[in-house]
Amino acid sequence: MSVLISFVVGLVFGIGLIVSGMSNPAKVLGFLDLAGPWDPSLALVMGGAIAVGFPAFRLAARRKASLLGGPMQLPTARQIDRRLLAGSALFGVGWGLAGICPGPALVLLGSGAAGGLVFVLAMLAGMALFAVFERLRRARQLTPDA
Image 1 (cartoon, helix red, strand yellow):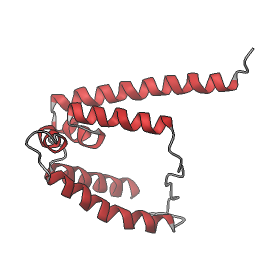
Image 2 (cartoon, one colour):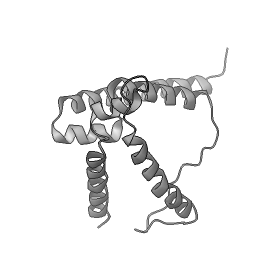
Image 3 (cartoon, rainbow, N blue to C red):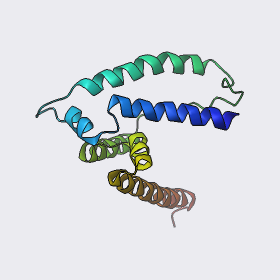
């Protein structure tokens, strides 16, 4: 049953991305282009998402289990460090160059758009590189200096 509910929630999310224009790279780039013909409509989409998400996360933080009975798995990290700032900057640059972020990329992939395929392949390559570098970093932390 939870797989069906997960599918329906993902489908509604994907439809929301399409309807809001978040899966249209040209619309996203129009929003990000403050020096050109700026399109502020996605600010309303983001504001609406925050208005819905903020109280939902506050409520979820008080619960021990999800509505389907699974454990609540909310982020616990609170510190802002170099890795977070660098990752945020890299994400922002990628979003600004491509006009696509991971959720809309999956929508584009599902629609058969070539840009979605290229983005998802690049995203997977980036995730693989991160995993390699993370393993190397942890191995260096465990190995005492000689």
